[in-house]
Length: 462
Image (tube, rainbow, N blue to C red; front, side, top):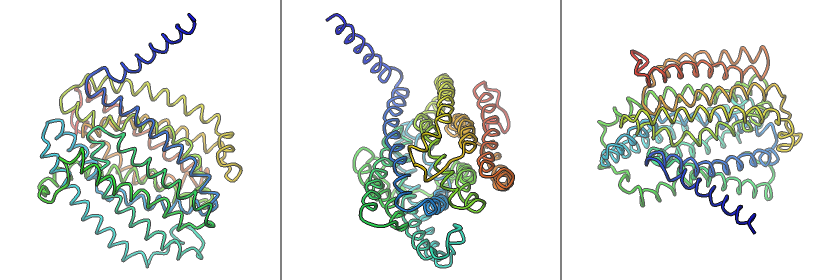
């Protein structure tokens, strides 16, 4: 009986410690911790769904067509950067307005961003309707000529849907800016669940069809975002409901001043991470796009975990910086470096277990050489380290050094990836990304230390 009582006491103690951890501290810290926990659960479920989707999708079509779809998805993903940084500009300006208690100004920023993005989206859709009939998708994607008509239709449908999502996903930006990233992440989870269900139905009712696949992966996201805009702006976020009466074009400059800087950073991210599929497809064929993406999705679990932790912190750092609470920022960054060490250890373990995991996950349909996994693991470790400091810099809006580095990286990366790819094969393309991230990590770390020690001058504080 005493053993049972002792176990109950220990259980109660652990429960109390957990409750205290998520309820004690200043309001901002409590909000961050609770959002990290909620985001963690949501993201883990999203990761599991995405991992299940890979073998299911490969089985529905084949590894070559899957590689074509991945390359097409990467190209379509480029359109996500046509928000010209307005999303991130809104994120910072909205957080600043809420921190200062100016709800009306926050609504002006929301309304103005929705209006401008609506115009951008209409222009993009009109452009694709005009240009698409003249595009040779087979050549662009290095696919068989016989697939050109299907790819043309698929490209048109998915691009239009993606453009609409580009506008509607601003609701997620507002949620995140208001330090509720878990709610924003839940939108992706629901869309992934619906896509999984749709593809499962396709595997049982149709033979492999890349157009059906594109619809299954695109339509659910658009529907979820449409419903979310209606729901949130009719309930808790009604004070920020976009309205034409609150559109004020003089605030475009404020959004653009910061947003255009983020736009350049987004383009650099596009070049680093979204062009790899296209480079691999043309250098080594679409089957190697599948090989690369199987490894990438496996190791990308770690950056996703880091993203879960970091998402609430961008706006929290903006809030702390606006209120001059430097000690909170220092303590937070110190903890994040410990997290980086733990995640680096996790990447190492994943690398050692990669071969049996690939075999269990996708079977023998896709063979991933160990060298690809090793180089990708190194790139991931460096990337999450750089990400910690870039989130700080983004949160405080001091990003000129990031801008200059981004311009250099955009010029250097593609030729570097092609040269290394031709020299040492597929690992060379991944190595190019790792080298760029090493440079970023070095500069961002130095800049953070200068800013927080109040020694930053000139370009270091811009």
